[in-house]
Length: 325
Ligand code: PEP
Ligand code: MG
Image (cartoon, rainbow, N blue to C red; front, side, top):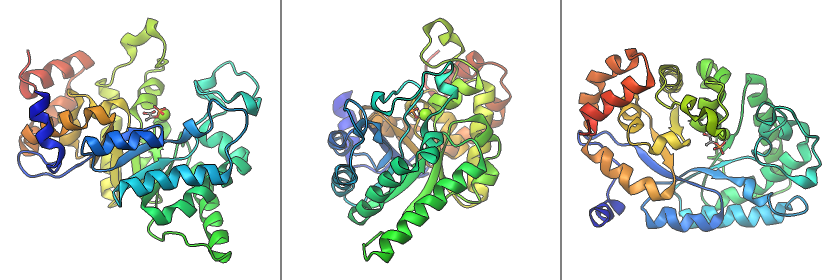
């Protein structure tokens, strides 16, 4: 089976009826790029930059960050590379920032909230990214966006740093797309408003599911509530994809769900453009999509979206599209 999958390393990501998608990888470290290349990934859909900030005693410098981003972009050789700005907080702590303990860290001071507040950290990262942009096909996205104002402020700061670099005579790629993660229900519900101002949207289902069902993604006791196929989750995903497409924007998914074989037929039918996952899932997904017929899936979509429970959705997809019971 894995031998057969190897054949897909050089093949395009395309459904049986000719619908092209992008199958990209998630990485958390520049070293992981090798796994994406070895598995024939079409790009990087999520570069988690937290690693640069973790397991150390002080903030990384602009130069350290520049080197890491440049390495990744160069190795990707022009393939799309989506870098997410710092998503610290929640379960990912940085002791040297000496942040006060919070009762609800997942609802607290994290990610873009922290970056907009401690702008020195944010601006340093953005400068490093902008300078590295000359070495590849960089797209930048902001995590944990809940309001339009946050996206506008983050984007304005990015454009300000870009202008300063240009004024100082530095070179900055003028094709950088600026997007955001849709991982908070409020953002999914007003995705149509975001799609007018962002170049792309990337759905972060790990957080979107936990916030939609109010079920901590790390808590084993309530893991039964962590339901990727919950009708509410599927409807939110549909809203995001439709909103992006209505405004001519592309939409990806970089949560675990993008590499889930039950979810994949639904996501393909919904028109998801980019599937980003663990590099080890890329070939399996490309093989699965190669056997799916998008037109045929679309005939089932309306029915799937009317199913009432997660279990019903799972059984339906398994029966009709995975040849399982
Ligand atoms: C997500 O929330 O789906 C996501 C991709 O981000 P992280 O898992 O890093 O929170
Ligand atoms: Mg997230």
